[in-house]
Image 1 (cartoon, rainbow, N blue to C red):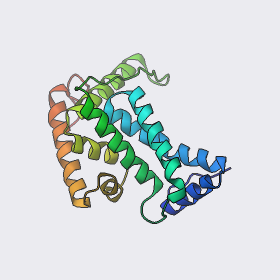
Image 2 (cartoon, one colour):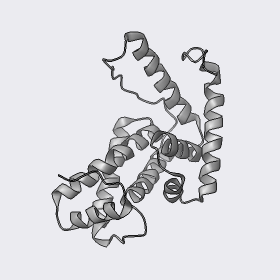
Image 3 (cartoon, helix red, strand yellow):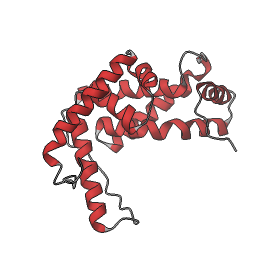
Image 4 (cartoon, rainbow, N blue to C red):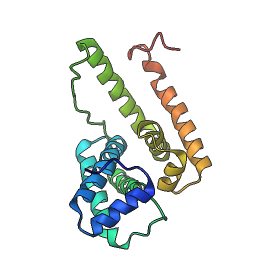
Length: 192
């Protein structure tokens, strides 16, 4: 059984095994990359269905270019995020702004009130994210929701680390401003 891998060289090694038709390596690399890309795309697009299409297309492009992969230039995950970013941007340019579609997934460990509050908070965050300028939204999602490092985000967005820091900071300030009027309704009246 393959262990989880996160290092770029290990990802590149898995990709090399994919080229050699190692299906377990393909499954491991997909399991490592696709869920994070799917979450990112869903937050960028506000649609799980579109996010699934973007994720599938980005992973297909990785498999197609795998024989030509040049280890050391970028991590496969970073490359796939960059492809997904471009696909999301293309889709966003082709459509009008829309309200995000969020599934209602109950958490049996939470009470009814807590589930409702969690759902309301998630919807408010998703709606607020869609109100951010695209670059700020990308930076905030990649940093704070997907947990990528600033250098990884810089490679995906093709900007410097300082620009990532600026985009993230501005995005967080704007999110705070957007959500400020909803603090009490979302149960944050006691949080300061």
